[in-house]
Amino acid sequence: MLARQIVWEVIRLKQIFQNLRTGAAETLEIPTPHCPKGCVLVQSQCSLISPGTERMLADFGRGGWISKARQQPDKVKQVLQKMRTDGVEATVRAVFSKLDQPLPVGYSNVGTVIQVGEGVKNLKVLDRVVSNGYHAELVAVPENLVAKIPDDVSDEAAAFTVLGAIALQGVRLAAPSLGETFSVFGLGLLGVLTCQILKANGCKVIGIDISEERVETAKRFGVEGLVVAPNEDPTERVINANGGQEVDGVLITASTRSNGPIASAPRMTRKRGRIILVGVVGLNLERTEFFKKELTFQVSCSYGPGRYDEGYEKEGLDYPVGYVRWTEQRNFEAVLELIRSGNLDVRSLITERIPFDGAAAAYDRILTEAKGYGYLFQYPSTPLAKRTRIDLVRGEKAKSIKPSSGAPTFGFIGAGNYVRGVLLPSFASTEARFTGVVSQSGMGSADLARKFGFNFHATDVSEVLNDKGTNVVVVATRHNTHAELTVRALQAGKHVFVEKPLAMNREEAMQVKKAFHAA
Image (cartoon, rainbow, N blue to C red; front, side):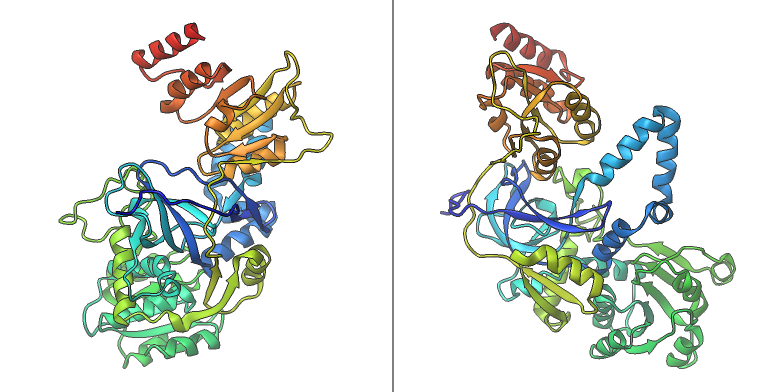
């Protein structure tokens, strides 16, 4: 029988992050992610760049303040509300803190399971899997966001699964039937996958794009392609291409600020047709066409049912198949079957294979210049070392020190917004000295360690609790963990600063009291 864990041999773990303030990508070294309950730890073999989504994030970062505000009006409203309640200074500090956080990128990862968390039922060590994990050498992913890869599907082909699931969910909402005709606006990677899935459903597909190269690629898959000018309304050309009839539905997979696709879509769609938005476009809807034709308009939510539901994604609560036939995970599995059966050709869409050692530089180049489809990061196959702590070398100005007699030295457990925006700035304005900071994924702690001069960052709380240089532990994690961590810190002989609440119930409070008196 296979052990539930394997031995890792070589120390090396890197991950790509994007700076939301500048749009630049960088590779950071982080500790081994914690493998929580209901999750698996996956060693990456390859991951696929999503040109549309990831380029959109990079463009957002490169834009100025006015551009950022225009792109996220809902966030502007939140900022204005916060100014009214918390004041200008606190709001500005919170906004800058948020933009300074490194954003992990990527969501199409293929690899091998090397550790299985408590409660995982359907996965085991050495399973080959696809997930929505980041561009990183190791990723911890909840079980419901992971799917096993069939033996006759390659790693590279499987890397297209998650994007394929986004396309598939859009097609499911369109509910195509044999012989219908659909238009697809935008023939990038997501659009070409959508066209192929529609063809697999027995539909005629008319693809629309401003790029002649993309239209020619779509034609290879049996799509009737139309090259349109940026401001052209292709309605008449689409109707002509469909024998003088309006199409049964439209799927919009483009990524543009233009209102063109959503303006043209209802004009070319028959009465009671369906319009599905999968991409991101301007949404200034004209009511008249929708009203006269009784059109259905729906926005597709990523990979399918379960997306953004914490119960499904983080707690592993699956939806009953009898009531929700297609969830995120089941859509992953369906795409893998489409690839296995040959109904979805992704291998011909691979544009470039990039060694992960040069990932950050390649990432910026691809998002700035690339016109291709499938850009794959390839990861070293060398076994990785389990290293939950990374020690840092500090300059003379750093606040971190080795303990001297009576000097308060602080280790932090938790690296969330409250720690980043309130606690650490407040502590840093005093004579406080910092030792280590811990976060579950290693991403937040790595960033805070650099910015606030910690001696080390880690993913295992024991690194702070057992650190001889730390005499005060700050507990700033989820509320339901406060009591347990406070007890452990007291038992380790540390002073404790804990966020409210100290405990969730009387029993936990008594455990803290007992540990305090024992210490």
